[in-house]
Length: 117
View 1 (cartoon, rainbow, N blue to C red):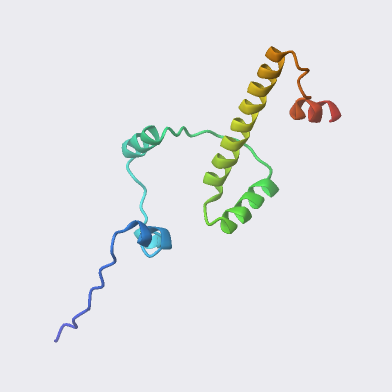
View 2 (cartoon, rainbow, N blue to C red; view 1 turned 90 degrees about the vertical axis):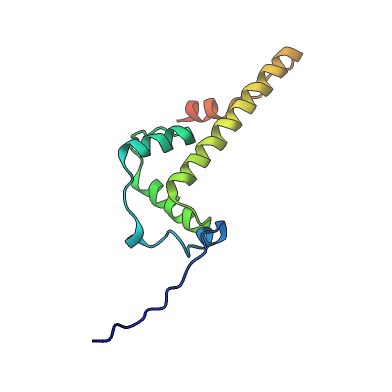
């Protein structure tokens, strides 16, 4: 019996090959990391797992947007939450500065929405 020679194709392990999906997106190569390593990765990235209940429509909307921006819905949610917090901190800082200067602060849009509800 003659063994068939298979031509091996080496895929370069570069940032471009990861970004294009040439490397890393095939489920047959995926495996869960050891729990200890997962904790170390989360610690290194400053991530903490939480549990949150969201409306199904909201999750589906994030998934749809994730495909548009070519990213997963959870990283997209993280980015949206970061932007919201940064915006709120800017509003708080502006209000404090206006108060310090003796200017009447603008109405907080979140508080205004809550009163309307």
